[in-house]
Image (cartoon, rainbow, N blue to C red; front, side):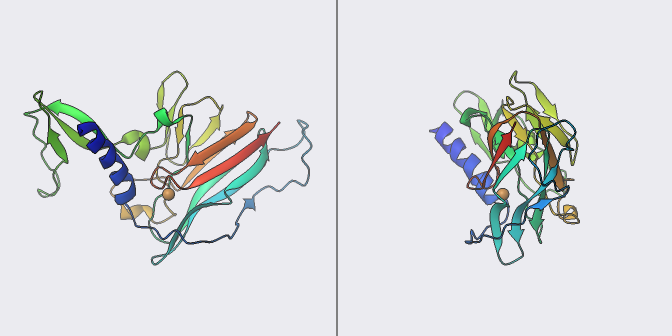
Length: 227
Ligand SMILES: [Cu+2]
């Protein structure tokens, strides 16, 4: 029962914490090819391309939770830079998840001794979302740093923290590759934490890959990396 509640809370966190979205039907494609190349010739003399994908679109009345474009074909060695395209501080992530067991949710439960006291630092504002259990511990919901900062979890379960606005070389075997929340440039000051405004991934390994947004799991992006 508790587990069900906690799972539910995790979903609530993801859906609830940030702005409510109007998932409007919209189909503008805004692919920018920063270094356009007219050939798909795969010789080492061809300079890799960098593609830009806009993450979300909209303003203070309507927000579109979609990647623009949501499908691209690139060549091994190319890179993609994702950036937030919303006019208001509305965060989205770019998150590659190898399988469902590897999802890192925004809010996750932790067990602490029952007598643990949480002391607010902001003018006595706030209190932890917690629940007592029968075994002398309590369960508190915490924000998950792996969801909220640029993070990679390798196939060997090594957790790596990336820098803000990182460039990461994806090898296709990672369990979890996450941009953390991306915010439009100049919108970062709306939060107490310094988020990224872009995330760049270099794709050296051919394959078909999908990614999503941890806040809006219905946002799906796909890409084909050709040899
Ligand atoms: Cu999103």
